[in-house]
Length: 571
Ligand SMILES: Nc1ncnc2c1ncn2[C@@H]1O[C@H](COP(=O)(O)OP(=O)(O)OP(=O)(O)O)[C@@H](O)[C@H]1O
Ligand SMILES: [Mg+2]
View (tube, rainbow, N blue to C red):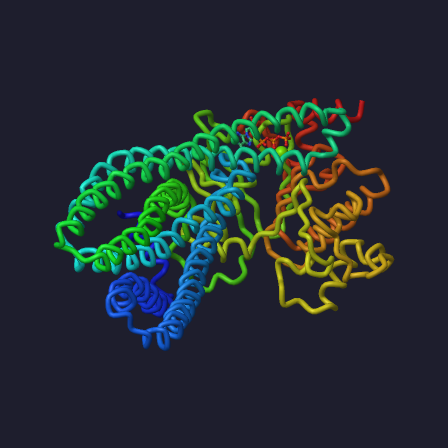
């Protein structure tokens, strides 16, 4: 009921479409009732009174009734379906917006394909239900109501007898509905897994081919594809069962009508024409009642989907805006970690870190793989919330700032160079959409990217495709650096930006980075110590702790972990 109310709330803005549809459906239902009702006077005129005059108006009347019914039907379908689609569009939009507000932790825990499936498939199944609630319940409900009116008006005792079997249908209908609801949730869950496999294998296609494991992936897919079929098969079974059960029960009703109604006619208590009118209404009633029962099943299916959709809409974003919306336009770039600890799950991967950077300083983070460097820097833009302690930017706890304001202060160049399926210009402008072409070019020049961009056939207008596959690794990084330069944020985070490049390309990237780092507080993570010799401070991180810190020379003299790493690289 609660779910139903929430879905209805989404239809509220489209109330006038729904109102028009309801009025039209009353027209359809009225015409159906009229047709059943008119059977009696027409038969009487033809058989008893042998009135030839009836043939002058009757054919025209039939056409008029059906024409009116057709127009009503079209108006109804058009407005109710568009209202449903508009409501669904809003739900999908809300769902997408919700995802944007959820934390990295949420995305770590939910595979991408799964999330896509929820926005695409779950919402579609839900939409089927919404469309059916309104179409089914309204149209068929009104029609059934009109026909019932005729049935009871003609002979209420006979009507009661013909419906004696109806309560018997309630129990099996409920049982079938419940099953279908459960199966719907299951099948959507499986669809999520299938989307996840698709997403993963298509983006990892190179690795699959390199290992020659196409057949194994096909087999893996077949397994889930088949499991999906088995759930759907059960759904089909229950849905297919509902019609025969219904028909069987209806046959008892019809038998009762023939038996009792027929004897009334023979006894002269009912005319033949009345009996036919009654029977016509009964036969016409069969279709809406059958559809109503089908609707019940579709609704059950969509309730399963709606539960999954609303579970996401109700998810509380872990990372919330802070209360400070002051004009924090540009920070000086003072960053301080104070007793910061953090854990993804139970185990702490950052332990009691104290680290501070004055505006414009370059802080290098080095240490063994898995030590917690990436994790530590991802706490600054609040990708994850600190477990204890606090991080300050210009003396303000970052949890007190509006997220937008905080993000405005930080530029990030990650090892994973993410580019969008768009032109190079728009990719560079990502952090500053209103930048002019001159600004874009200046940023590209500083990032040593201008040259190769102008050599591309369409220059800055070149579309670089999904994940930037149409440019080389080093070029991709330089585009990302240009993007960060253009954003011109006071705080910069560089995560291993120079690995995986050849020497020439690395030199170019390094020069680009030097341009990027000037006048910014920079946290740089690099495995190659040669790139960080000139850092103002180097913090050596091992097992989540800062085990050493100082300048390159101080640390060499210390003879600790840094010296060991240094000697290993230059041995
Ligand atoms: N999303 C995550 N969920 C759970 N644990 C994680 C996650 N990311 C990293 N870890 C764990 O946290 C620890 C620190 O990882 P982190 O990526 O910060 O190391 P790193 O110092 O950047 O390593 P590398 O030098 O190899 O990049 C590791 O033990 C890792 O297994
Ligand atoms: Mg890392």
